[in-house]
Length: 185
Image 1 (tube, rainbow, N blue to C red):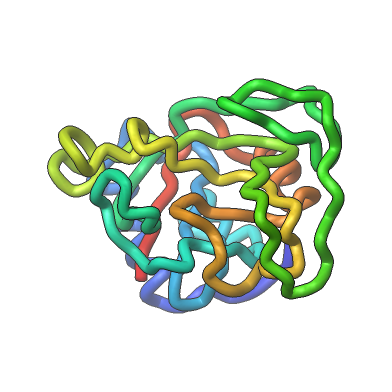
Image 2 (image 1 turned 120 degrees about the horizontal axis):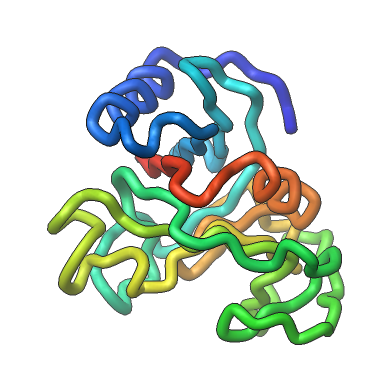
């Protein structure tokens, strides 16, 4: 995790989410800034550090089947893969015990592997990312590892927030079920 001083905008978005959803504010939180392709780890009003990420190559949006990354305030609904190995592949949230070959270059493969850890997100804002055709949990929106590590730092996913495997393993240990995850432009 890289140390960095967040912008006033990031701090304000985090503070607003904590005020609006206090039942989720007593845990470390994550704030994904799509325009920066960066995830900030926040706790008690301070930034603990950041990681590079990849959000959707199709942009932001909440609709089912859009393959876009949803905006708004979410929480970690489920944590999956605590005992999985580095770059271990998941299918339907189940461990396959197969290890993905990491692609270090900026090459997009024909695979969409979910690796190492899964933080499954649930939207907290009715009609924005919760309920109906905009429900992030029903859309299977995750923060997860990827074998396409060379694409981290640029939009490359099909809706989820991708991270390098070591980074998502570290984040998994920092966040709790119920931790806030704010996704903003």
